[in-house]
Amino acid sequence: MGVRGHGKIFFLDLVDGTGKIQVVLKSDVCNVKAFTLTDCMDLGDFLAVQGEVGRTQAGERSVFAKNFQIISKAVRPLPDQWSGLKDIEERYRQRYVDLIVNPDVRDIFLTRSKVVTFLRAFLDSDGFIEVETPVLQPIYGGALAKPFVTHHNALDIDLFLRISDELYLKRLIVGGFDRVYEVGHDFRNEGIDRAHNPEFTMLEFYWAYADYEDLMKYTETMLASLVKELKGSYKFMYQGTELNFAPPWPRQTYRDVVLKYSGVDINTADDEKKLLAEIKSKKVKLDLTGVIGYGAILDTLYKATARPHLVGPMYLMDRPTAFVALAKRLPKDPSKTASFQLLVSSRELINAYNELNDPEDQAKRWRESEKLGKKGQTEHESFDDDYIKALEYGMPPTAGWGLGIDNLVAILTDQPNIKDVILFPALRPESA
Image 1 (tube, rainbow, N blue to C red):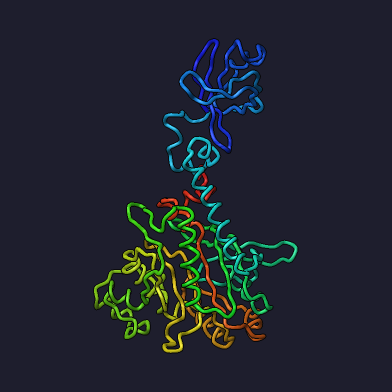
Image 2: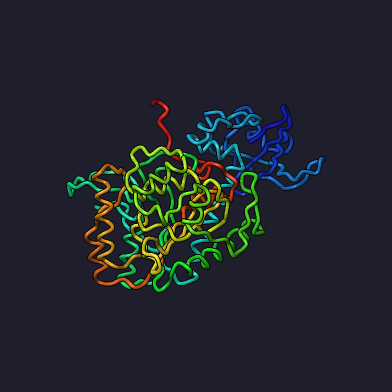
């Protein structure tokens, strides 16, 4: 990765996965035939060096080479070591070069690996078992999102790339596994921005005989421990703002934050007509193109007015039933669900709730979602007969939880864009 000197002595910077060391090539020490290879050496070449470790006159620890071989040749030159690979688009397209010339990028992905390893070990130690569920699904479900569609030739059927792992993991709860989790890729055929990539990594777990209060305490323990291990403290900076993961974390209801930042009270604006009238009355400007139904309009209002102000870490609790189709209702207020999101720096890192295990209520909510789809709402849930059948066999009281790994790693590594924590993010082809 670096060459200095000429004639009878060269100083090389040799780098591998464990670090960097200087190599000293001297014509009177190195094998004569090997030394002639210095004329063929280029930045990026892979070398095997044999010699003795010592220190130069300047005190730098070095390998004084007695012999060396070029074991793989770089025929395309690396970017200049001073200017590096700076163009963002080029870095994403040629991640292999980015990793070679930008050591900080390598550190980001080593941190990502540590995060996933830590989360797996945390769940394993509490009796959760890791499972795998289908990526290709005949009916997509578990979230409000537009799926990718593919075709299976042998079966001659269209299939969907999963948008969530949820419905299959809960089938396993029905089957008697009390604690299950999956780290897997999900796919959503939607826009690309700083917080979204069409292919992303989720960690989902489902815990029988627990509720969302248990999950909030568990989440605090899990993520606070992760932050402390990685950072040595519960506090760290993200994009110039200090975040403090020391538990317990603040809790606010969805109703309270919407009321605070938009002036709209969802307890009185409890249907589509009333909500639109309140939005107009409060002079809140929203782009509602293609947004149909009470839940979708309310979600748009929240994201435009309240979410940008929520720094966190904090829990946003008790979201309306209108757009959490798989969550159990609050007994004291059936218009809301026993649910929470973990927000950090205005990003929704975790979505969790008490799982709806009433097959009749679940079927009714899915039918309502399909009606909205027929009215033109692009993101809606589909009716899944087999899942309803599973619920009819009985599912114990269960709490479920989903974490976006990419957004979590972006925050932990101080990256504003999740493309910087995805090795090969989705990009438009260069020829397009």
